[in-house]
Length: 248
Picture 1: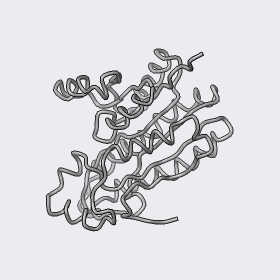
Picture 2 (picture 1 turned 90 degrees about the horizontal axis):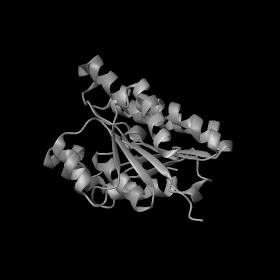
Picture 3 (picture 1 turned 120 degrees about the horizontal axis):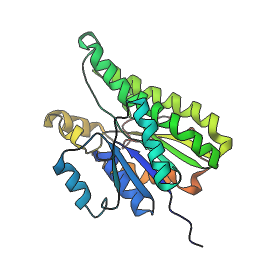
Picture 4 (picture 1 turned 180 degrees about the vertical axis):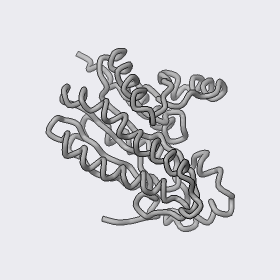
């Protein structure tokens, strides 16, 4: 008997990294739901017309809205019978030095980048533990490990994600649910391409492998951690940064 496909929900699913994750999980046989803010028509058409994401369902969602996240998880479970894989890839930046940062810039980043992880995990984890299987992958950042000038809000949110990941991993380990994080370095996405060329080239020169990463580099790691066979890996952080930051 052929096993039924795993059901995956990817937040930030229409973004550069999120889209690559959706495509990879779909290629691996998962039924994938991409949750993101309501996209414009052109962006949605491009997503639907891409053979790699044509079979991916799009769900409009503000991850900072606790009740909307509850409804999204309930919708996926009602439509597909369960939710097996949750990838928290939604994230924003509102960069400014702390002495110039507004309360809104702080709140916006924490609401999406950290509260969003809580909002989705809070509603997904009960069903996963009840069924005895789940894979949660939280997309953090190298800047959550090292800090970055002008990113006290972003670095705090991404570092907080690591602590959240380890704590939830302990809570769910005996229930068949793994919780891990991935810390990308500088990845070739619209967010990174928006940097001035000189700054982007300067960053690339400091990366030991000599280049920025590709979204597929992150997607491959998500697929690895989301696999059924990855049940002995939990509470871990996987750095994918080209050697920009090394630790053990």
